Length: 336
Image (cartoon, rainbow, N blue to C red):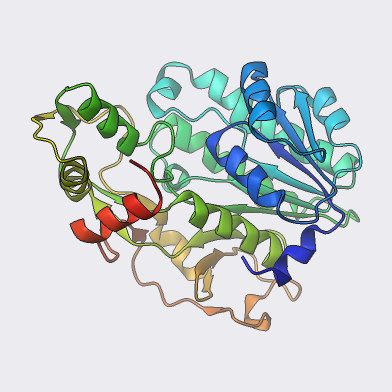
């Protein structure tokens, strides 16, 4: 992210829902390097907020305990806010299969509450953090995140005279984030356990936390409202990640095959085949926009052209990282 583009945050008040998560924490650190006036953290977990307050010292930081299910509390936190980054969600795939109603309340109804509150408070930009699980969803979590994305995109068509933009970004698990495969492997190695792996030939898109933050900043800078930004990424096989990790940690470890978890995909997909006809692209991103109007036409925006995607954009159809490339990423990102 260039210094020039950071001007978009000058004097702005920013609210991050789910701001104490791994993404929210790193996003806060990045935003504090800009001239934003205030950054508000909205989340449910008071312990995580206290931890974050002790780790990040800045007078521009504000903390609000609250749940996006509570529209009244959201409205209070949104007073005079210019930009909202919506990262709050229930996210665990397997948990969602056994608690679907709770995921609907947070990921769907919570997003609706946020949209309505942002309209009432005349927020300028609302950006949602999506997931690959929302593409052709076949698990509960993915279905709720698909609806989150659709709610944000569709909000642009019933906002009326409000000068507000709703948009979203979409990517898979950040490498090394809580709940992803890398910390699971690392912990199993550290405690002398077998490495559990479902299928070595499974593939996953590779995105680091810094790449995820760059994507968010690009979307906030270039977004016109109604679109979904998807980064152009490489991928890796689980087998290559496992081997790279073992070599870096210089250990010998046994591997145990385990069943595929409920709702788990063999390959990640970020753009479905049915979506390919509505995709534009820049050097760094694909941009999905379903309803072309004169005011929402990326052919008129410098740097964007109509994409020529013939197949779905999935982790088994892109360039795969070698073991050596994975090792370099793990070392450079200080993930082990």
